[in-house]
Length: 155
Image 1: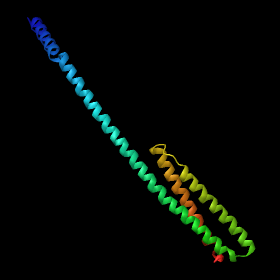
Image 2 (image 1 turned 45 degrees about the vertical axis):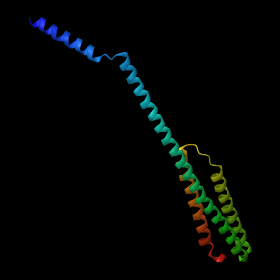
Image 3 (image 1 turned 180 degrees about the horizontal axis):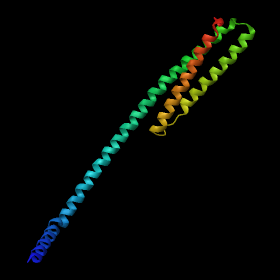
Image 4 (image 1 turned 180 degrees about the vertical axis):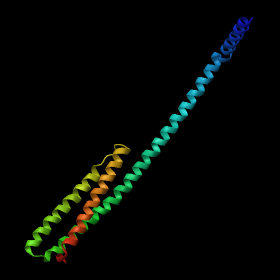
């Protein structure tokens, strides 16, 4: 008797599972259509987010470029001011100062070229470029400061 009840219970459970687990073809089609619509909405959202990220990146680069173009122009003005100041230096010092100024001018020009030639290759490369460029500009700024500190006799 126990075997019969157990067999009946298992059979009933399996039959109930099969009947409740089966969807009609129209229900399957509806579910598939809903999934497709959801997927399309997710794709549109992702595209929108990507476009916004690209626009933000372009705007950030344009602001970065303007900021550092201004610094490069300021460096050029500093170089010209220093050229005027070293006119009165002794011949020995004058040659040394002109050599240092030529090096500063070369580094400034290289940074300008690096800034103009940068192309957007993705967020990671942009972050690396930005960090390296800022570091290079800081080093150049220190070189300018060192030039005027080390050469106080120029004035």
